[in-house]
Image 1 (cartoon, rainbow, N blue to C red):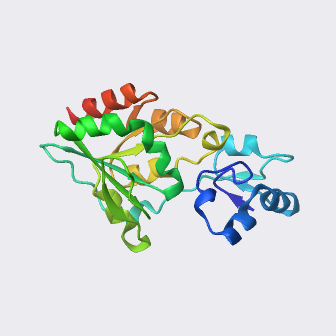
Image 2: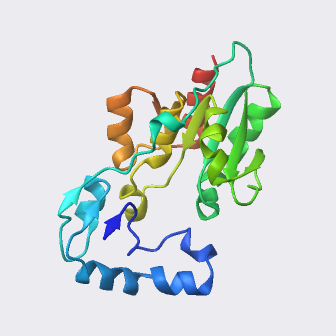
Length: 208
């Protein structure tokens, strides 16, 4: 059983899925699979620590194919190109940044593009996610964003967004939650931010 999310915990993504998918992936099914598995692989130590009833046999990070990502181009002039990629259920993590991102866009400091299945209702342009063009879309960012609240579910995430951004040579800004702290410290690829004010300050710093 290969896990890169705490699928046995309530997930914002699952609420948007079809009924059959919700049935397959709801906590009861996940716990049954966890109990029956001969081997469990977790993508992060935080996820391993959150497993109910057993520990992972192997902690093996989920990483992107870095060679598939073109290199991001960092422009001398603004606005700074911000990007976010992910599933539609996680779009809500951008909501607390709505005012700050709107202000930055109005001032010409930075603009955001979201790559997912539906548009975000905040100040951003939209690109529909496609597997074939995913790496190219990420390479169109200069700074990749990963805001998440501090919850048991998000603390167990693998930080895959940050790894995608870094594979393309983007700077990153991320909530210091779970493995994100370690990725920021080890990579020195960007900044940590928690509150909307900190997020705005971090974006302005990188834009400068």
